[in-house]
Each structure stands twice: as C-alpha cells, then as structure tokens.
Length: 590
Image (cartoon, rainbow, N blue to C red; front, top):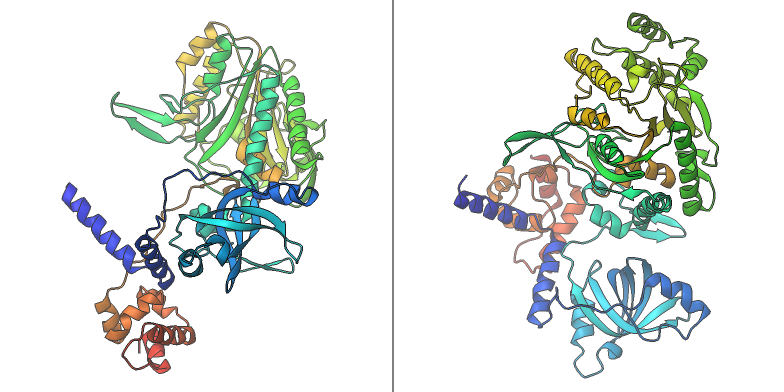
C-alpha cells in the first residue's frame, strides 16, 4: 500500500470518527474552541506544582486545623453544584476525593468575572482536570473542604464519563460491564476507585516478595524474552521472526533454564519477575500473557522451599490484611504455616480408590476409562496421571496444600526422589482448587537431563505440541556442574486474585488480552433517507447519537421522539416538529 493510499484511508477514518460524535462530545469540542478563543490553553505544558494529597488532607486536618492553609492540588472534576456566585466541586486525585468551595469573587478578584461565569460555569465539565490553590476549612455541614483562591484549567475532557451515583450506601449507574471495563481500563480506573486499589495491592504484593528475597541475599535478574528454544515448561509457544538474524524465535514460556544457568555460574540465589507468553486457551484464571516469579536457590531442596513459600505467603497476607485469614472466592483461607503436605498418588488413591503409582500407560488408560476421565492418543503416562488428578482431586484442595512427589513422567526438569526413583522431588501448591506455585529439587544430573529431554522429543513425535524442546546448551551448562538447587515458580496474577478476592484474571491485569473491537460502519445520509428518515432530520439523528441503522432499529421511540424535538428547539430549526408516528415508522422501517 502506498503512502498516499494510507493517508487517504486515515482521512476517511477521521471523517467517520467525527460523524460518530454524540451531541455531548460535540458540545465539549465547542467548549474547547471557546477556551482557546479566550486565550486559555486547555492543555498547558507548564509544570503545575502540587503540595498536597486528598487523603493526607482528610486524615490530618481534622486533628490539626493549622495544617494545609496554603495548598495546591490537582485532579479531575467528578461532580459539581453550581449555586449562583458560589459552587461546590468534588475533585478526585490519585489518592481520593475532596470537596472544593469555589466563590466567584475569590477566583475573580477584579471586575472581569470570565473565569467563573464563563469558564467554570459553562465551559468546564465533569471529567475535566483542573488545578486549584487555597486553604482547607470545614463547612457548616462538617465536611472538610478546600476554599479555592485560584483555578487553572489543565486538561479538557472531550468525552463524558459514566456518571456513577451513590445514595445511602447504594451505587447506581455503575460502570460494571466487563467488556467495557477491560477495553477502557482508563475509564474504569477513573470511576471505580476499588479497581485502582486492586492494582495498588498488586504492586504491594510484588514489593513484599522482592523485599523478602532481597533480605535473604538473592539477586534479581533479567533473562531473554525472545528465545531460540522455548524451554522451562510444557506449553505451546508464540513464534516470531528475527529479520536481522533471519531466524525463528519464540516468546518466553518460562525463564527456568536461564535462571539455572546462573546458578551454574556461581550465584547463591537468583529470581525474576517475568512476563511469559503461552499460546493456549483463555478463561477465568488463564491469560496468554502473564506474570510469573521464579526463584532458584543453591544447596536447597524442595522441603526447604515449602517452608520458604509458607513464610512468604503468610507475610503477604499479614501485610495486606493484618491477618493470615483471607476470603478467597467465598472461602476463608488461612495462610498460616504450616500447610498440609500430601503425595499426589496418595491423594488420587484417597479420592478414587485407584493406586496409579505402579501402572503402565495401558493400565492408566484403562483407569481413566473406568473413572470417566477423557484422554487422547497423544497423552503419555505423565499426562494421563495429571488428567486423573485434575478431574478427581484438584477442586477439593481448598485450604493451602502442598501436593508432593509427582511421577517422573510428569516432571522432565525435576530430580528423582531420593527414596523412590519412579517419583520426583516436586510440589505444587493448591489453594481453592487452583495451582498457585510449582517447585522442584532441581535436576542437576546432565546425563539424566538429556534422557528426559529425549523422552519429551518422543512425546512431541506422537503429536504432543506441549512437549519440551531439547536444549543442548542447557545440558552443556549442567555438564560444568550445578550445585543441588531448589527452584519455585508462582503465578503473580493468580496470587493477586487470591489476595484481593478478585474472581477473574482480567480484573488483576491492567490491560487483559481482548478480541479486536468491532466498529459498526456508519450509515450514510443517503442510506438513512432510503430507509425512510426525512432528509431534514438526518443531522438531528446523528446529534441524538444515532449513526447507524442498527442503532436506529434499537432506539426507544418515545425517547428518540423527545430527543429530536428537544434538539429542534435547542438548535432553532425552522422545520415542523417531528411526529411520534414518523419516528416509529423510521424505527420499524415501515
């Protein structure tokens, strides 16, 4: 496509975009132009000095009213009550909301009252960002407020916010539609303060973990996101192409093998908060792009790691909630150590009566058939056992439980169990029926590791597209010698879900993956007329927010009738009022 064709397409998109503007959006653009005509820059570049936060004022002023007598604060207008020469505004900054008292003669001490009468009363809207200076006082109604001495326009909002109303503790007209919230997270954060708090808690959780690791003397590192071999987990990778090297590369599915290379290099302990990518399904607890923390510590084993994880989770719960008991999806979960520990095969036997510990692949397939567990021809022993466990046991593990000693076929990077060579020294931590953490006594025998990789290759040849690739450089690193090591990975997104009580992973991701937004094609004026709309009313239809025939067919006839005649009066159109019967005909295409 040529540059000129591209420009032409963009021009068309802009024309369509402008045609879609609602009446409110057009009014705000008109206000924007008026501000500029008054010599007011609605988007100034200069620094605006802020010396106070809403939460600090509301917390500290009631105990010491000598504070905050010369405040400068900035934020977004969330509501306002205009009462002649004085008005009240609710201002929201990053930390909360506070009431402003704006008096005309205070912000306009000279004869020119334009700032109040025109700018504030007529050209500013809910959603606009302003800066004010003044002093804090308490109103006759007992509300801590700011008496405004000066007002500065900092950013004009061109789209109206959803108006969330609250009365007697009840919320009305809340911005709750999940798809809209996830697509327009910026609006979600503005109007739903509890959403902002979720992401504050997410940052706290990460910092608690980071502090905990740093106190032990472990090193935070960065490893490659683009990898020539997608190792460290059994998962389907995303594939991309490196133009300069002319090679295929994979987005990281895990950082395990790079972190263990660093243990070979001599570090006592390393960890990384990494963005991982797996080209797999999406549901309430899975997103193709997610954050994982992995840590590897030399001279430790999986028993030590269990205690390490218990301490970490107890610390997170206590710091966030002041108790180890957290409500997770309707269950009171106690993160107080110690957690229950149970071998995987024992749990399967406990729930099904079937001992899978010594079964071969054919016997496992028959057991799955008897238990009603679905399988397919690509599944080896490890996946068959995992299928039985997932179907019959996982959902019953509500309180924190370390599931230990997995069959060797399930764990190609894990050390054989010291007492049973058919098992591995591995645990997964389950909470509320969901896996939260996965850890090993890491395999450091290079010969055994190569054999495990070759076993994975055979699974791949059978059609298992999640089988691990052979990473010969990692085998070479092990041949230089890796000390006994324990490693653990924990999904940060799921941990945040549990610690905040959120039901969906999308609620703990600022910008979750979404399908592309479908834009309805704008109906032309000619198409509206062909549909039966009177030519002189087409422009008013658009002002009423009707830009497509689909929107017209879904419109409420009474509301549209009133809106159109209201616009006729407001715009002083020299045409007769539209009849309700005509509007109904347009909607019903009669």
